[in-house]
Length: 292
Image (cartoon, rainbow, N blue to C red; front, side):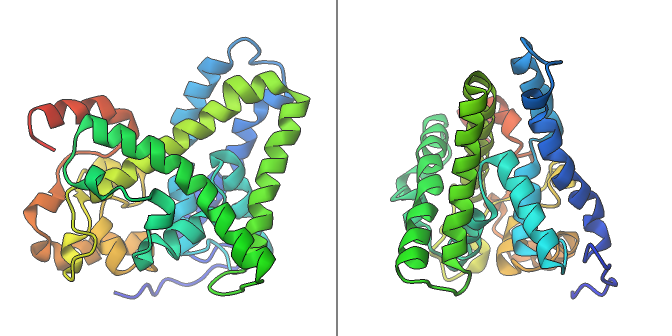
């Protein structure tokens, strides 16, 4: 069902106003220890608290790269920079490996030959897949954007030259912070990035383990989390089949799209539990009892 809500001047969809605020506040919270001394000696505790507060910024960035929050290019660029700095995963990275990679059935460059890891859920497969694909998902878009953007100036479906510069800007930003306050970068910022990206890869694993991603049947390609709390906190990300069928649909439309196709999705791809990364121990327990 098409979304007929009126567009705003600054934020296109009313439901994304709070997401826009979250996107701009997140870096203030994350980088506070670099500019004030209140948290000195308690950085690890602060990191845990901050992860609970802004740890889902990558979900918000995912929404933004599919449906930019604003029609104003400069404001969208600000959102790109803001959330990229918080997650360590730039908007250009997302667009290359996810929007124009994963959603087009192109995964090999970004997660390698990992089909065996995705056959069935297991603790070892989940952890291995998440750790290894984390590395590939980070560096492959940099190499691709260099080859396409710097060497060949490819401009479709995105400007790969800009994508390369955006990723280099993030690396330069982190390098500058490391020169300024190396201790904070080492014990606080880099672990935050690693946890964020590990959880992102883990949720990608949950999205597709036990699925036939090459199937001609689009209803067999993804798992779906039906947990109300998970979908509330992740903007309906659990309705993953609906998202794959209509990747440009606004997140508020996904529950209705899911309802129209739910009877076509095999029961094994409808999961009643939350996919939250902090529930990994619970998922491991479920897998031991064959309930994943």
